[in-house]
Image (cartoon, rainbow over all chains, first blue to last red; front, side, top):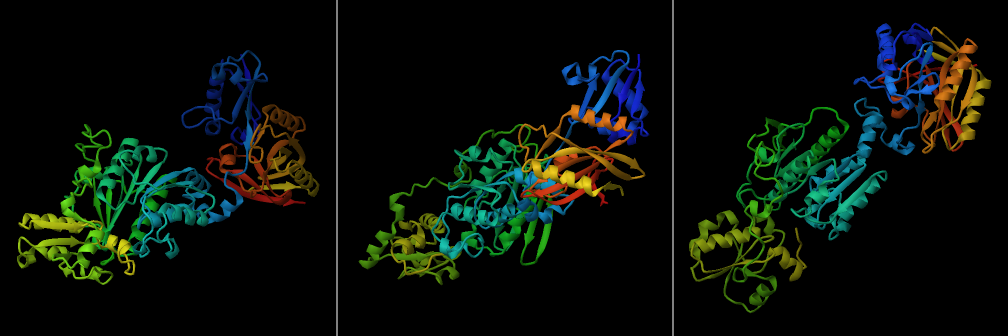
Length: 469
Length: 141
């Protein structure tokens, strides 16, 4: 029994230019094995690493495609001709000429190239938070050609955002952040899609919003949302490019990726409320988030393109004042409540409660509205109006007849009031003032109230001549 | 470095085919002689782009057409030296799709056709390890 294997012209360089190779095999598969034994170099052209026939290789036995017969088990009658025929296919790239010229600097990188650029085009990245981190991250993702970028934020642009949130302009103050961001990003790159979610990420909507995306960039500024993003990413099995900023320092890592730890492996529980001040309270160097947000975007792009070493298992810390980067090695914890061996938490929980933040139900006797305060000031009622903000904040706006004691110094000054004095406390938004109110109550002051919405509400509703921040 | 040699007459026939098929991709074969890295084209065989859809950016040649081209070459004691195709409104460089569907040992002549005009033509060979295309010299006599 002999069969003639007909070699196509391009492959004859692997058979010493022979067009016809005799074989004695009984089936097509065996005939190929015989061929590979004789000419080993031809093997990788015909079959892939797993030994399967490459999809553009056709085998014909006596003019019939073996796919219409018994495949590689097709028997070879005596004097058969087994012909190897390339399915000749090809075509232009899926990137259009404007895209090719736009991404030329990426295409020049062997690590990215057309293949990587197409991966970026097909990729979907969700950015949670259109703030200091979200702005640079989305800008670079858009510029780099990430095909679909989702952006979640319910806030409007405020004047105090412009010091670091570089997507927004003066004219956009008061407008929805995600709408402004979408317009700006599409101007930057019309070849991509932007999905705007003008909502707060919550236990109710997080899984639904995150699910369609390949990975998440966490640009949140608070603990409840950070734990929510972490847990949702673990449950949906998405890498989480984490970043956070405070004053002059930043942190970055990649969680739940390549078997590495999640945020809870590092911090199983949040700090007590109030221990770690927010950026609104503690301040942040405007340029700092551009560095950390860019690191998050870099990690996202690397993960999509499948290049380099990710920050998974490493916790990067940056100090802008010292201009230093430090790195900690972090590990997945077997007893992690979310990604450990026997997780306690298997679905999203109430993250406000988890982080010890009481639900927003101000008790009437503990709160006072800005309108009420205005009436009482106009009536010249007798009470202490206590401003607990920092010095720099008072240079921006003030309420008349206040006493100024920064929050931290309040315990040193409690002797100056009588327990029967009525005290009305305010800060910027009401967070610090509520803590001071609760503290003063423990010190025996019977009537202490928090100005609801802080001086921000006062300026907005009573005295718009003063600036907001 | 390999070289693909074409006569002026042959390249004009190929260009005319690419323009005629625009905005779809044209495809065909070059038969000729192959010696010491020099491929000299003697005959152009246009083929039909059998792709049912996306013919603006994909082509497919029927295995039967390939067999006929190769038989013809064998009968004339020539080799099938090149697979020709056009890229409508795209540059004359191989795509990732081209790479994964190509074989080494043969020239891939690609014509860039912009708005119905041929604006470029380059020839390429796949490396033996299939990792990338290398541009070869294209000489027109």
